[in-house]
Image (cartoon, rainbow, N blue to C red):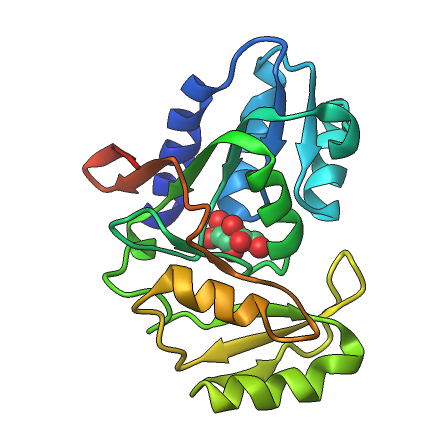
Length: 219
Ligand code: 5RP
């Protein structure tokens, strides 16, 4: 097993301490979350709200009941991974294309626990990883032009459609030095459904794995 995979597993194991019996758990998407999902059958969950169809299918296959967010009320805990995280626990997410559903479930939860391996920590968001932006299909070219005006270089994610039937523009070279401001600016472009900057609602808890163990950072 690679060191990175071992770190993902260690972070997922550490996340178990935030899950209580009979809880309806918000479950994110991605390879780190998959490590967590494998551990869930050992727990006594009331159910789970999934942040993507992929996660929903995996949870169902393990016999975990899927709850519609509209009937779940406010969730106590949402657990997910990230593509990048800064020292303020602000994130870039959406590498797996589930950013909108992830942002909704995170917003509807009291506590967002984020699990990362050492490769995800950055000083400034968006320098290495592009900002994924979910866009209504008809608005793709218009939004791309607006992103270029902001200094970004949008790249259409080929052969990918989100759970909501939209497309993704992975946008390089945006200035993410003020993540809250840029998140808002991107949301204001007509045709943008959601963007992968999680800054106004950042993580509450960061479980940061490295080869030395798992460090817990709080907002
Ligand atoms: C999916 C996401 C994931 O949380 C993010 O891509 C991290 O994935 P991984 O755990 O596989 O590195 O935002 O939309």
